[in-house]
Length: 346
Image 1 (cartoon, one colour):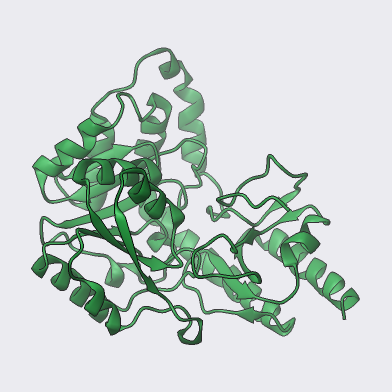
Image 2: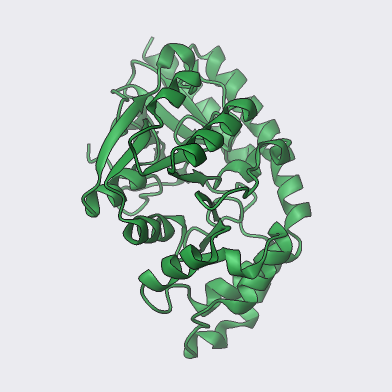
């Protein structure tokens, strides 16, 4: 079977239910849908190259100065811009983690070292990671990590930030899934030094994957200007900017509702998948990470259900899968389908 580099490849298969893409099961906020329809005429005009109004909205939401914000065509666009701007020679990555960090670093000729996460420790980083934070220029840290869904404990995170600052290492913390975490505020990072960059996106929490909108936060205004200028002009469409502004107007209530819904549905999936004797890891994000000896993706695709085969992640082998938390109806259908087909497989 062809394995797509990412989830959400509903175009190569006949799919009725997509559990491979980790977007908000509540969908795009209704106010954003309405705003997009009302503002369709903006597609006739060039978008604001500086994303001024969007930055103002992000500034209010994040309680940070506009000058410390860079907007991009999704978080992936910003990952490439950051690497292109900094031109690091040596980098450290966790394995497994989001593959676009590695792709961006290789694109610009960077050497990469890897900190292999241990499945016996539930793929959770420990303090031995600190020993790897030397003789490198940049470290990407996905928190919660993709595809595992676990968090770096706050005490260790603070030590990582301190060590990177001490060693003059740029630390890029990807928080694109953090808004799905209960009590996320205690895990959010404060911009306390110029070597720290935080990645965020509207893709996941606001289910705007097709619009492509992300942003990064950095205290170094000069670096922000360099990251913004290294990309192509008009990388953020007018519709995306308008949708982003609308999404942030009632974001706190929407995110709170999402966290409650996702937690309930994630618990439902976790309990029922474990009852089916699947090895389900503890997860804090809007997806499930599991292991089984069965070719689960092939089996489910025959039922027109798409999940994420994780065998193309570094340090993962066949048998690891990621399943997005979807709506209550979809989650129940998935469990019923698995109960039936797994009973057939003995």
